Amino acid sequence: MVDFRGAYTALVTPLRDGAVDEDRLRELVERQIAAGIDGLVPCGTTGESVTLTEDETRRVVRAVVEQARGRVPVVAGAGTNSTAKTIHLARVCREAGADGLLLVCPYYNKPTQAGLEAHFRAVLAEVPLPAMLYNIPGRCGVDLSAETLARLSDVQAIVAIKEATGNVLRAQAILARCGERYAVFSGDDALTVPMMASGAVGVVSVTSNLLPAQVAEVAAAMLRGDLAAARALHLKLLPVHEAMFVEANPGPIKGVMARAGLLAPEIRLPMVWPEERTVDLLETRLRAAGLWP
Image 1 (cartoon, rainbow, N blue to C red):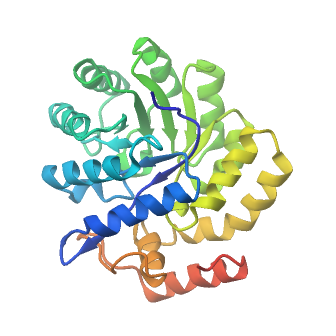
Image 2 (cartoon, rainbow, N blue to C red; image 1 turned 60 degrees about the horizontal axis):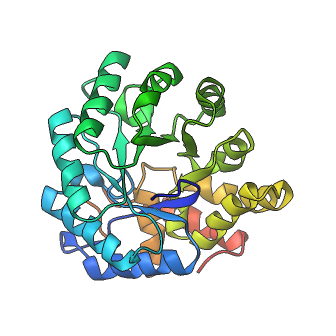
């Protein structure tokens, strides 16, 4: 059973010579677990899911599951802009051993709220793994409302929501409308403490690819009620969080991880490698915080 609480890492997909670098992926998983991260989310936005083939998705999820060995839950990204394809990919992730699914709102199609509801019902009727719905209107062009989440509350497989509107008010609206029915996660590193102070239970983090121990400690401090400790570390990390999004994710995080020697400097088109000044900015802010590897 997935414990949807704490800091989950939205894993990058390391690449080398155009292919998934499975050896480096396994090293990253081991590094995450050793640092105390609470869960792993392969094949999401940060993992360049939309440019992975079905076979690559299978291989990535299987490698993460095998390396994790049950020590932390693995919630695999299976969302697409086609309900039929999402069902198929969810089955692929289940067969690869995923403990749960990350299901993004269908992008580009711009479905109505009724369409979003029908989509998630259809997917989870076929593949009823524990699911975290993923609301990120800036990338998808649609916004999953608190009212729609309330209507979906009878779908027992939906247990969490990754809320990435960049708006703490939305997290509050979900909690006010749905109570504790869903585990609400911040989808923005910079909003972890404000959202958890409102009742969210964790974060799906980009920064934790590089700084898993620090991000995990912020979430852990909030969960144990130590606001002062969480706030102090969160504010120390805030300039780093902000620099992670100077360019579109996952460019900056991959850039700084490559500079730190954690993966090869490779990303898939239509993404291009981040500008040198972006990685310089991240390194400068990490050094200022005393966090450069």
